[in-house]
Length: 257
Image (cartoon, rainbow, N blue to C red; front, side, top):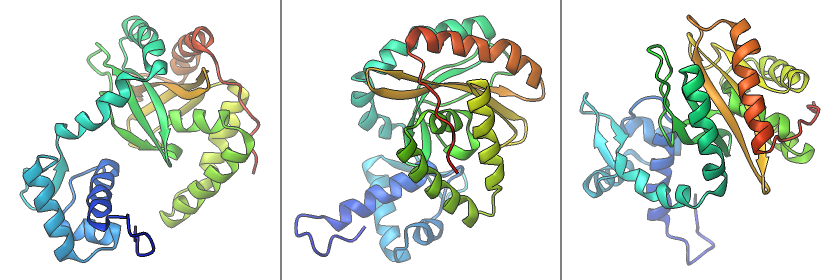
């Protein structure tokens, strides 16, 4: 984060953005102490930054009062980008059609570092449908969209991304072999499928797409308690594969280990 050798670099701005990025990746509100540990800044500095971001409307205190969460104002930074995404416009009708046919939520996800970001979401009408938020993020190794994207990456990019993912997973004491098995299955099947990897009771199916040089993934989260693996394979995955064929399916590359 330091810009000591760059006179044009504004440390305060970088630190404020680091707090926003940290909260965007978090699965729950974080306090000043949590943020200080994650971005390695003094608690007093973090306290001033969270106060400033709260006053500007980008953060709010959670119900507990001692932690912070992002506000909808952050979406104003991303909406102009989303509005100009040709891939999003191309995919939107397919998301709506699949969601109407299945009753489940369907989304377009794109890679953001070691995460997948849901840039467009059509919420499912089914009572048990999993809800996703536009702008929400999941780590690549626990999401079907992440597995599908990895499988479609050019060899060199996939190798470097997998290296970073493995390092992070080892630090978290997570099963790296599970990621490799999911990649191998994706290459064999033509789509990625996960069950209970992120949270118990949540799974997903995803297919990579490539349109005018832009990669993405069609993703459908499902409740594993009411949607069987057989239905995911036999009914839901084919619908995503059919849509990907109409949009522009991304060719899968053999995983390299």
